[in-house]
Image (cartoon, rainbow, N blue to C red; front, side, top):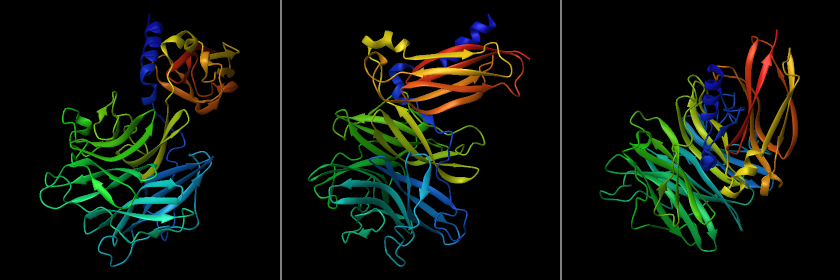
Length: 428
């Protein structure tokens, strides 16, 4: 009876296939971007607020670095071939403060970079004396930036409005010629942070929406009862998809998800939040923060700021989007397969598994995020053998029993909301 209950417990921890797009895998390589261990570096103290663009097989990230000695926040650039291993560009920072500036004299906060037909356009928050505004700059190569003469392009409104104190963290979509959309955070007389919406024909001159704010805190949900901020909006599948920061009464931040048909009226999706802080003493155990999301074929990729014992650093998570339809449920049961030999074993066994493609009946091409882990009888994870994207095909890994006691273990293979579990016996 104990064995059956244990296996049931393991299976119940899996997400429902209906919500596979919400099942995020944090990278085992986290944090993927850390501060530079050089007191003179612009990011010696913190590395935060990533903005990522993918071009063919190259990922480019613009992020904010903080130097504690200089007390300035400036923007640097890094590149990666897989989104996990990043190389900081030698030309850093690529955007610096302007000493004595009324708006850009204290710190800059990377928010988003848009790739258009004419090059790159960065939208960033600039802060001086606590006043946050939204500015923009253009670049041909992503390294040499020219500020727009219209800066700041959006200022806090006057009077008693919802965003009359400070604004920032813009997320901009270029939908085509003369069609730019922006979602941004603002704080006003109520001292609560909301999310607003604006449109533009050239990406520089913006018109706020009359119905602002378009997203306010949901006081019935503790995780976002105090504030909502840092909207990151994508468009695909005829919908807008927003990943945003929710803040609870203890100032702990998590990331939630909402969708919209027009970018104005938003529906929160369950389960939320979709990404939360890590375990006690992990690198991201205190709170999450600014983030960026891209849709890459069959996956959402998310880079996020988080604070833990090492300060503010940048991590990475990924989520599969493609779901099995009702018609393919039978094929879905067969989408994963696994075997182990020898079994029983001592001291190691070879575990072979097959990852099927994403086409009809699992026979198509494509890549999937795969996790292969070993658990003890109490359901505790004792080994993670695979936790990464795998192309369709056959694989083999070794499971070493060193340091483990004799007995029964369970090896579980997961991908896209599906799983298969195999019983293993370690003999001493």
